[in-house]
Image 1 (spheres, rainbow, N blue to C red):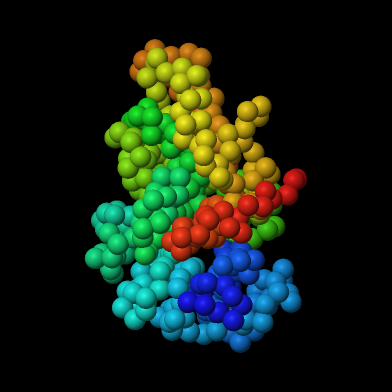
Image 2 (image 1 turned 30 degrees about the vertical axis):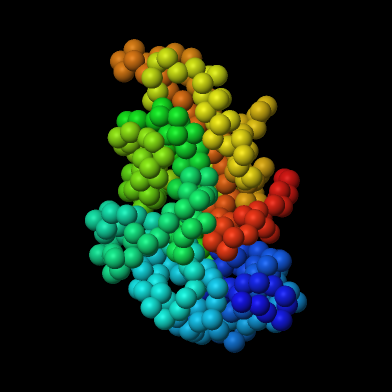
Length: 358
């Protein structure tokens, strides 16, 4: 579908006033092939995009519109759905029934194949279980060809993306099984634009605190993904920690490997998994760090293998480290990457900038 700009595709962002929405809008305004046509929101209705996103001052004549999701999707080639969990699940069926638009959903509502797991971790019965099998999980490093062939993509969660990419080489190599323990440290932007008692800057800036330990909703998503990649009988224990950062996730994952696994074998597994990946880096002379990827769609992964074998289990521990920007590769950037694949475009489009240092 052509436009007056000469761009080939039309896109709408639904739920565009939050931090993730701002990143979606920014990347789409830069896109050479996709024209951002509508931004729907229940906030800032009738106001310019810069009312919510000051960095967009003078960058677009669009305003936030109060539209139903199906109205926003009408006539679009693709919609990027930035609605909250539980809300998206009620909106997607209407979009599919009334439009031909492809969908990239950033909520958690269509990531899980198991409706019982969704009910347990999201606290409600899934209202559209028949659609779960129609969505492809949008992790390009695992599902690139399936995303290209799909119409509907469930974009992964920020913690899930970070942890999965740290452990994916082990799963693909058949080395990952049994107990996996993870501590994930995250920045405040992952909590959204509205401050709460636990995310407000005066307390966040001087504090570390955990939340949802062993119960976070990304647990079944991570297990599902790693099992699909080749892991065996994963039992995941995950503790998230909020940190005084605006952007970034640092995940440390402890896996228990066969005693005979070597450093060289692990190096080969990580190299094989990510040699041709445009956004995943395995630093040679340092371990991953958040500032190296903040502001970009890039990921850094690395590992440290314990010298000794645990005499009780006969296994050797590896610490896998992985870092992302939670708003970009952990959110809007990965959604744009999947959108590019859906539309048959170079997946790197508008995402190749390396971010800033420090």
